[in-house]
Image 1 (cartoon, helix red, strand yellow):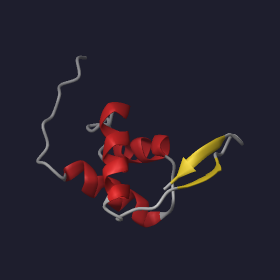
Image 2: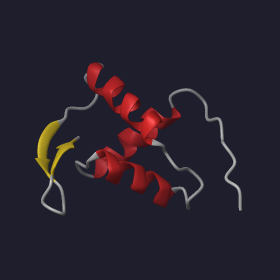
Image 3: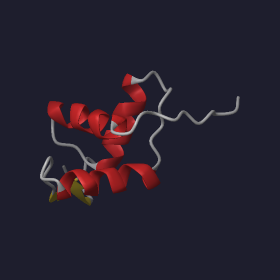
Image 4: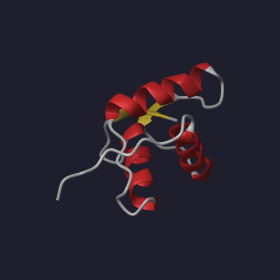
Length: 79
């Protein structure tokens, strides 16, 4: 089954990220996975879209990031 690209209104990804982070701090990969889960696999956020959006939100002061440890004990940036 081929995946179709869905063009969402500007700002939708930012809102999805903020909604995901409202529940608990997470790292980028977990944010992407959560968005995919809550959309019943309709939305799959690629790294090329996710990380620029995270940096944009951080520059605006809407989120803050710090270094932490992932579930598999690896260093990661937590938002």
